Image (cartoon, rainbow, N blue to C red):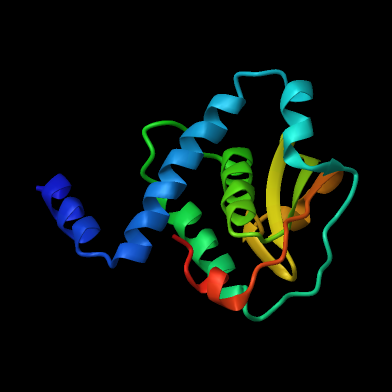
Length: 161
């Protein structure tokens, strides 16, 4: 019964949302496969190491950014594989890149309650946090990757597909 209800909800979505969820699902899967490779091989594809994109936001891009953030957050809860912070950040970065929107992926470390080292990744585009913002303040940034993207016109941005 739960599956049928979820399927009805999915099929009831508008075309833009459905395609955005499908893109998020595929890119979350792709990002997850990257974790099986050495990070030194994956890092160059994440953008310019040690750099950040600007913190100013173009208000025309905000709806696309929020659509990406919402799609990544929603779909990551239903993937049959683990879609934790780094997978979500990489997939979100790729979705933004496809829309011509720059972003910065941050990697941070901290110690948990038991004193063990833990890691976290989060993604920012302009002044908006796309993923991982809920706990980022607990972490010290150890690396960052800037992915600058070409600028697009408002009409191109409003049509993600």
